[in-house]
Image (tube, rainbow, N blue to C red; front, side, top):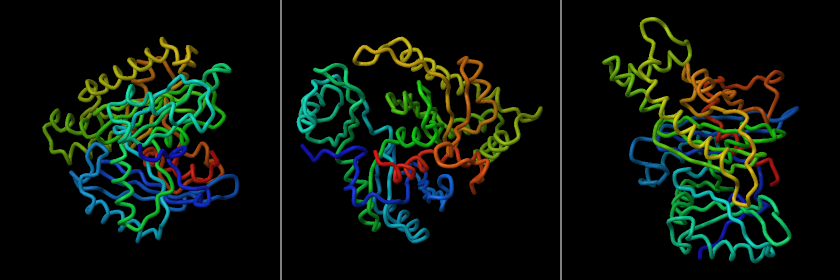
Length: 360
């Protein structure tokens, strides 16, 4: 069995320092750093570098040399050394287990014995992390396990090493997003929808902890393709129409909502499915889940006009765009140097960056 990483797969405490956060997807690398300021944090720098097709596919690195070259460019531009990176949701396994209440030094081996019952990988080829959710009674506990193929971790470590970067930690996208967009003092449950370019991630956060994640391959790219087909225009024109519609809303000539409603209905079906399961099933220790109080939208493709009222009416729940600054600063006192619609795509980055200042 390969070495088991500690919480969020971090490096030792003496390396715990502010660092650059990297969100690597199939199409881009978003990055940024925050620094302490009066009353919270402020943005030091941020950016977005495109990744040509085929270099990263469904979160797996297919061309280390090309990705390393892009990372070297970012490093040179921002003069960064230490990084905190997200791991692709598509390649992660997150699940809960009811286990005997054994001493900490025995917990890893106890989880290891059950690992292959919950993931389609050999235990010898996996890196996993665990966290105590709660004690059930004096004899048993509920723990959350996050697992990933060791080969994936090694590929990310390899590109960082080749680029001259030192990884401080690896973390699930959903965990970083939750740290960024869910208020620290919020109780109960919230559903987060991360609307990306090629996929949509759905997570449910209860009392600040991510307890469920799911992804499916429908995102802004497919909506662009639908618009292009409907209006018989190029992909480039469709993309521009979508952005204009996001910012300005509908007009009588170019109302794209009827064209994309079938795609949004797919999203709605996914949300309803996970919402229903969450509300009608108990947790692994038999405790009822908290009621989902609202839906938070984030992601680079989330700012599509009409999505919020459509989901709000269909789900009969409050639906809001994410405030990625909610745990960092009061935007009424210090306006961030990034437009609101653009900030929606940086929820993972800012959550990773914020983790550098939080002692878990």
